[in-house]
Image (cartoon, rainbow, N blue to C red):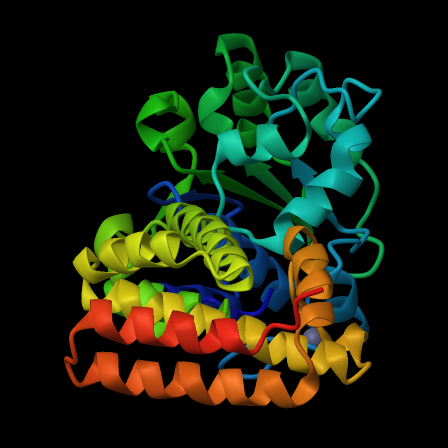
Length: 372
Ligand SMILES: [Zn+2]
């Protein structure tokens, strides 16, 4: 994770960079951020910047040996403590045993919240916990000298869920920290931390992402502008929420698309009229979003019928549908279908009555299917 990978939050990035450049690193820092915000990502980018062998004024180099290890979260001087719970997927009771899952969780998306993590490790409906043994074990983790970097860095995620004995064990370590060691406490519920812990740390307050940041983030995840606008309005700068909304939107669209295409295939006119009535009452963004989704899938099918299946970005659950669907329309038809959907998009954009556009499109598409 590099600083430039995180949308916005320039003032925080510049504070962090300056602290490294001036060698003013507080030994314990609290990354205090709102749920779904940039705390974890920022701490990862900060640790990468500290360890980078060739950092520049703005960011880590991204290519040195240290950056390469940090990008896979396998740097020997970078340690983690995070909540764990009994899980079907992992046999073990320390965060060490959960490390492979933790790495994949962070590398996939470092903006998620505790329930997302518990879901990821298959510990749904359980509470996460940082045990007192884990907290006491920190010193053992840090007792060896830094292997490669100048500093050893320990990132503690969600110190706010620790009970009194775990908190006190951490507190003891913060009071007498080992040399050349940095503690990054990363918390999205800092109001639950012991005040004695807070007073031992330098607080970095990370604000919620702005709407502009959310749009950048969603664009990076290939979400269309129309959908991104709706999600931005709903998610309040929370990236975890934004991704969930995007997923829901996607699920809902794929079901809708499959039902639509089945009716076209069967030439079920009465059902197509019903779908057109439903379509008519949607707002314009959603109408466009659905047609754009259809366009994307048709294009994927075109690639598929071309025999270049490995290029497909289609998620697994849609892949079978796309494969079967491609068998019932030939290449030329598919190209014509794409033209038709493009024309329909154009008409929707220009406020032609949506019901007419959709019904007309459905009946035209239905002609292209090869029925056996
Ligand atoms: Zn580097």
